[in-house]
Image (cartoon, rainbow, N blue to C red):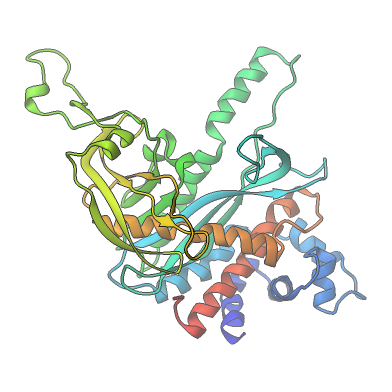
Length: 408
């Protein structure tokens, strides 16, 4: 608790006034201690203020001029204080849905339910949020890491015009869809984290490594990475790759070739017996495993551009048993690319496996912290109540790391 209160004290400058900061601290602690539904009424009852005027607490989210992204500043500083001095700053990025039933809540739209069975796609009404979490390692790799949220942003869909609207409205809609989507929001979140690291002495000399899933391994993200940022992401098994061009590939006259000979696709690399498997140790699922991997580097991909060399890695599936003595089962292999071809295989694999902890963040935020349970419909309140709850959760994780040591 003392470490948690200290983190809230460091973040008071984001609220401007002392009384607003104290109200934020009370609501943040209530967000963690509430044992019922995490509505604003539930937070007031947890703080013992159910018989007092509640209007100021609602105005705190609807009208107070604080910004959600400023609240994560003390969390980043705390992570950097605990971070190994010779390690790059590793983070993970992903999006998540907050289920909503109200038809008047800003940003709510029909989304594909990620829990749908494979044979049928279900839809839910939900808000869409983008999260970026810093990964605080427990020691030298191979080791565990704790994901601590650093960014939580509402990314609503672009409003779709009606069928009877003029062509100009549809043209503007398609233009906005290209400019306002999850990929562009992800690029801005990565660039913002890079700027925040550069502003701090402990972070300005570190390389930023971002682990993402396949939905962010695309042209928009790969071609707009900030300087000193490395991306590790999944790629399709049939992605068309090329080797860098050699002098022999160039014609005597005409335009110079940007791509060389065709490289094997990830699936072809997996099946190519001429390239041997290598064994790499990495921490995952509570213990250190030995993974079998294949790799080629450098390769080029049109989505990343001819000037961005990549490393392609195929990770063979690890066998598992549902019970002791059960049949040995296997999941699907993983196909990864990294924008730093010189990164070691052990680092690359471990950094990507750490990305799974952001899924643990999503589960804890929804099931334990109550992110998305606040019943608010005003635009600012709808945008700021989920990030505020995530800030409280991030401070709790960081306070635990500072008090009890790194996760193991």
